[in-house]
Length: 438
Image 1 (cartoon, rainbow, N blue to C red):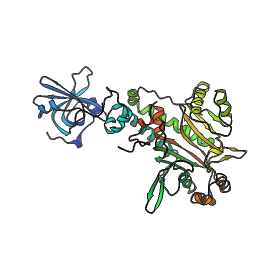
Image 2 (cartoon, rainbow, N blue to C red; image 1 turned 30 degrees about the vertical axis):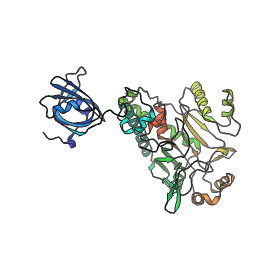
Image 3 (tube, helix red, strand yellow; image 1 turned 45 degrees about the horizontal axis):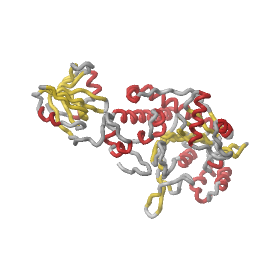
Image 4 (spheres, rainbow, N blue to C red; image 1 turned 30 degrees about the horizontal axis):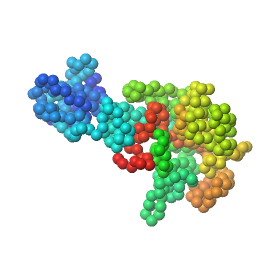
């Protein structure tokens, strides 16, 4: 019989239903020869299945030199297996080699021998074959899909803002400069400003999923030079509380979806999803200074808290409220960009919020300043040349609704949700200060 890959079925389906004349293809996990029989465990994206070969099977002798991780296709009948598990197996009538694997493998695909993360990332395409690693990205896919699904049902429009900027998107931040014909351009650090311009353009609700870049020489377990965000912006908000309620509902829907649709993946990782209750606890400046002081952490009044403080505040919230999520609100305006809205009654504080998850910042957002005169006043206060941001601010002269939003880090929420030791485990191909390939 001829092997047709176009008619192949997946291992999980084969194990569930006995069927004649089917084709299965995938990677070889192991080969075992017993007398006149050979048993191959084959893996595809749905799981594994046992292939059983008899000596009369064509090309039987080649099984003696078949290496793990080679890619093969096999055709035959799915029958009730004789193994202890009782799972179906494929009784092979014909098979073919699609791509042989060299030996030894550069890393242990199945995790029997621990491999350092840096070496795993050197051999990432091989490393991804380990089932635990694949589950991370299946869960990540569910997080992103559920976010888009929820937001579009709520009337949000999917948009795509530019990644190339003619000017830095955030003053004071490290940026990647790239040649752009006879000019220079910058990779965006955040899709923030173009989201706002889209709102002013009349798209009242939008979601933008895409990459951002920061040229930071950070070597922590939580930083990347390239990351992706689920960036959301909404017009006609009353204040930052409306933004916070929207993000809370979104987080709840994302975690519900993972809990419902990723049972097998969560079992493999040994993780349980706790869907949080809303509203999330909120901590505000300047009260945060007093909370930290009681935790023996001194922060100068008017300054922003540091990474150590985030951990302390996370412990404080967990103990007082029993919650893994919490808000930090009303940051000092002095540490925030020109476009954030200040609290009119107490202008030293901004309507700027961070959502924290297990002591790590998950997103940043809040209400933006939509009033042109106020916006320009803040531009001047920040020491920014009005002409350098005119490409952005000029549109506010022609009617801008009150608006706000946030940007959730895709890799960050994946890593925190699954308690990954390093955020690079939540990235297919990492870009950090030392890594630009593969």
